[in-house]
Length: 379
Length: 258
Image (cartoon, rainbow over all chains, first blue to last red; front, side, top):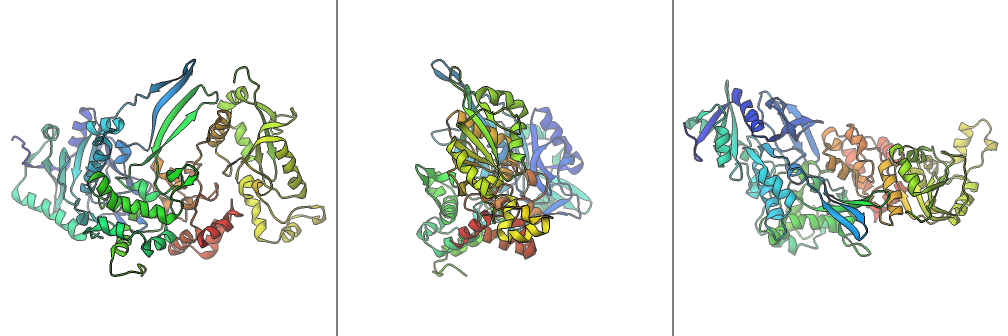
């Protein structure tokens, strides 16, 4: 059979490992979910056996726990502490080296070998996050060449969520759970009685070509229906939501709301929310020298708007109070991001809620801050 | 550095375990390069050879616990162009600052057979409480890379890349999974100064807070959350009072009250 962009294909569970072999053959490094340190993280893997088979996660504000499932689902969980930005926008990166010479110094640009990554198991919220970072890094007057190279080389195998976690709110952000665009292949994992298979949609010519190398067949109407049902289930399980109506102006109008002060009393300004956020992109650059001062290098690393150094201008930090830092982060993410990049900076993945060490829930904070009827803001 | 006189380095010890100055000797691969760039003029742990002061760079380890030391640090300051404290003892009073929360005479009576021989102050205090300090390097013990970075920055007349944000940032940069969220471990990482590259969480246990308080630490909030996770009050108090019990704890509390 010939595969078209509108085809719905089935790959049986026992043939799924062929996807890994086909990608490796094309020279891709495969990054996928895998169990490590009590969580499902994203790491380089070589075979299907490294996926979190039969695992699921239970998440809440400030809590994450792995649990065994009753089945052997490969994608039966939600997003964990890592996001794909660790591959596309590395946590730490040497930008260049400089060597002292008689005239001053000479800059030797760093030639970073760019790995070709195939990402397996990318969720809809994460595809939206990648799209947001594409805009930040590739669509302005200054293109980030490192990101661009990595992004253009990447192959994306997306997965429709068959369940939603307690901290998920993609439905209300219009970013999921159904995968819509930005993938090479998109899977839905279906388990019915003894059957276990993946219903696959094609999103690119590369995806189409790859699928030809894997044992597959055309999906039957009832299989397509079952795949759609799993996404509906996820939609119904969605643990949280954000009312985005007028949010852009509501946050700005409530700049002095008492709730900012209240949340600052709980916020640790530790930066975890920004580090786990799949769209947060800020970095710091550090210049280091060797002991002789003959050689220097510039290194870029992830930074956070929750640190004092982040807003350090001449003489001190502009945002010295935790209140001002929390407010900056939240209003940027949900309001001024729209002014800056034309979309919200939040994709509703819920990571900032789960991985906040003291369980601060951004959806709850927004509800308080944007609620015009409650002037005191504290309940 | 060719053609110019090498700056003179001195390493001083006060009440401490020697672990921090040992970190300088631990710079095995870099030691030769260090001695190329700087003259080790006073470092009794490494050599009996003493080059007289004044010194360009003094590294000070340990806290002030005796009257004699309280005098001696002034002399060292007068003899030093640039003074850097190394480690928790010198920077915050160290583990021996636990005495600040109790009556020191009670300790002396319990520990020593002849308490009358002991002459000690009631408190263990940071060097900065006695003299002007140019830079404070934290840790119990300090981190070797950070020590090299500070010496390096001094030699090259630049600001050292030593961040005062949380240990959490280091966990996330290396991809370590949060032990507080997954294991409900009372980890001090969110209120602790970075610098160790998140060593303990990388070995699947909570941060002990060896590096002391980070910038703007929120002790009140994290204490409440520890209680919420089911940690006993006495245990919370113990966690917050070990390597950097004083004055950090008090300043942390003040920070929260503000």
